[in-house]
Length: 229
Image (cartoon, rainbow, N blue to C red; front, side):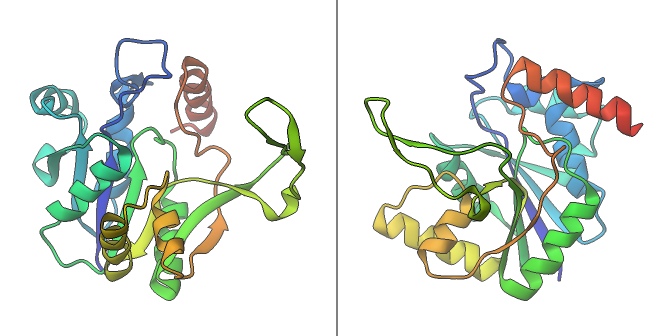
């Protein structure tokens, strides 16, 4: 099945102690956004790549990416007020009829081509697939006053990553239903789950970290050096 990719890159990056948006930061001489885009641009099955960016920043993004990506293969779309709004705009901007849709956070620049391939295979079979990793620490449920309510069994809990991959009809139907019912979620798979559709979880990668702080950027740089990429 042919593939389209939507890269969510419209975030403000408020948790970064930096005036520059996290997706524009330089990671070992290459912008974080460019690294995330190139994962899909270099995959033989990906026919369309859409980057959803902050409204009004198209010239800046083009100038940022020009030395690192084939900019003519990237469609830039203005994002919305929330990540969900931005991904919805990306879905509406799809021009092709590719059967699989990848949705990826620009702030995860270290995902491997091997993981992407595994997700594509799982989504072909199940309709939806996400990468997950087990929790290393005990988890507590806490109320608004800071009191512990419960201790969930971490053996059944996972941390979810991106890219998340879906059959086209599954994710477009989930977003259409979310819009009609006013559903809000922090990741795309949650909207599919709300439809009662199965979502396949496959092993993610510990190195597929999300850059939200200067420490994350430093760790990502170290991981790149260790991998020799």
